Amino acid sequence: MEQVYRYKSFVNTDRIVFEGDIENGFRYLLRIPLKNKSNKKVLVIMKNPSKANKDISDLTINRVLTFCNREGYSEVNIMNLYSYYSTNSKRIAELIRNGEMDTAVGKDNDSIMKSVLKEVNDVIVAWGSNTFGRTREYKNRILQIINIISHKNLYCVEENKSKKWYPRHAQVWSVNKGIEKYEWIPPTYL
Image (cartoon, rainbow, N blue to C red; front, side, top):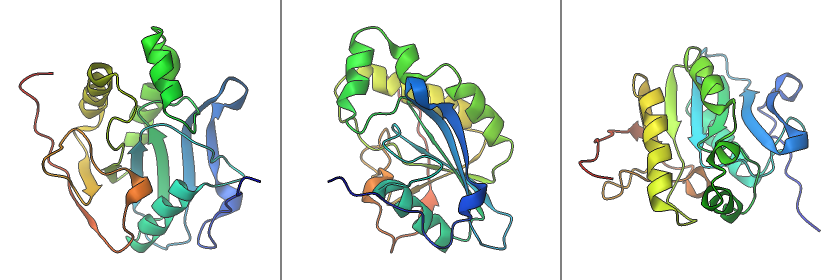
């Protein structure tokens, strides 16, 4: 039987906002208010949604929330490079390989992200490495997102200086680490 994760006690579960299309398999935004008294809001951008929704969490989301709670954020907005629900990112690769990039990304993903950016103080990039091949397409998607978010305060957790394309995925964050400035260096080639 698959483990079900509940939201932590420091989450205002009755105020969680889900924007997406469950019937067609999309989660654009998961807005999770925390019980911190600050007014600091953050957008965390990962690769693609796995299981979490308004009612249940998952291991990665709980790790993000624990981390952001400790950093003093009062609201955590979770979005992804690709909004298509898939616990196995190979499904995303399959969509891309079949010319269905718009399905993988989701028609409302970027416009919702632009709207959320107006409300947050910081952005933590956490999409991790390319786990499904399709390197060119993955890097193109990262560039699209960087162009959308580059005007904000960008952070990461445990930056991998040798892999600027791939900030550490939230799934492997150490809750004992802090955030650090993410310095995007535009590539000279793709």
